[in-house]
Figure 1 (tube, rainbow, N blue to C red):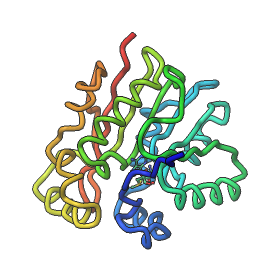
Figure 2 (figure 1 turned 135 degrees about the vertical axis):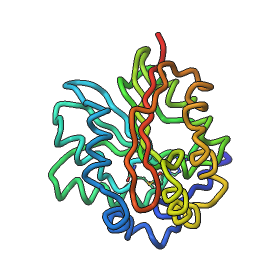
Figure 3 (figure 1 turned 90 degrees about the vertical axis):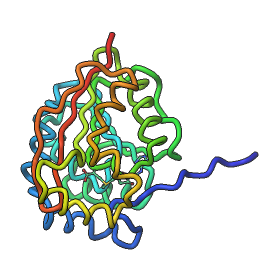
Length: 220
Ligand SMILES: C[S@@+](CC[C@H](N)C(=O)[O-])C[C@H]1O[C@@H](n2cnc3c(N)ncnc32)[C@H](O)[C@@H]1O
């Protein structure tokens, strides 16, 4: 039997050897409490909802999300076993139980129409165009009709300074995968994947670029 190999991916901080420094890097370069809490305001997790975080990284969002609502069924999906190890250790420290799944970068390991909401933070700028589109298609597939998608990621810079500072991210994560973000194309891809009510309700300026929120619904 031929085993399917995991797709190439960009690690959390650009290079595998830097992953252990990810949390520190975010603390230094971004207003972490503000951007994560605003993301969770948009997510608004309710009792008994089934919510997926696509690209959970070191688990920072899931810890805060579980603190917001311990009665929500959160699940995380990522491609990198190294971040799963870091996040699982963090969850044990916080005494919380959240299922974390890994996959090979192709189809999500879930049945169609099984999540009320899917959210994702700082992931799409690490995906090449083809993977951005295939992941949006997979998110659409696993969302229930009327389900909500919430993306927080680098978007069109809100000032010239933001554009210049974003070169730090582009040097670490690559110019090719980040180009569509900086050109403001994420909402276009959401629409192409079939999402409706696509909007950008706000953004947060950071030391390394404009972090933008994008919301959308899977139609009925
Ligand atoms: C910059 S980190 C963001 C982590 C976290 N969501 C946050 O807000 O801090 C990006 C994450 O996306 C994951 N990732 C990269 N390519 C992926 C793919 N094709 N599918 C799923 N996760 C991916 C990386 O392993 C990493 O954990």
